[in-house]
Length: 101
Image (cartoon, rainbow, N blue to C red; front, side):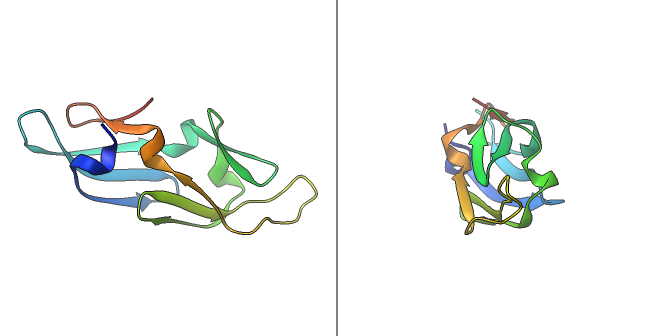
C-alpha cells in the first residue's frame, strides 16, 4: 500500500528524510522514517530510483503532496527546471513502517 494511503501526517526532515505517522494492521498510529538518500539519486538533473545521495547536490528540496521536488544540477553544472518524483510509487507502509519497494 502506498505510504500516503494510511498516513495521518508526513513531512520532509533535514531535506532528505521522510517522516510519517502511518497506521499499522491494527489501525494504531506509528511514527516511522526513511532516508530517501538511500534510494533516490540524481542523474544529470533528473531524479532516479535505485540511486543514492540525491540531496547532496539538490537545492530547495520540498514535498508537494507525495511528490518530492528539488532543483537538481546537471553534469555541465547548470540546473534543470524543478524536478519531481512521486514517493508513493516506491515508498510503502508495511505494518506501520515506511519501506522502499
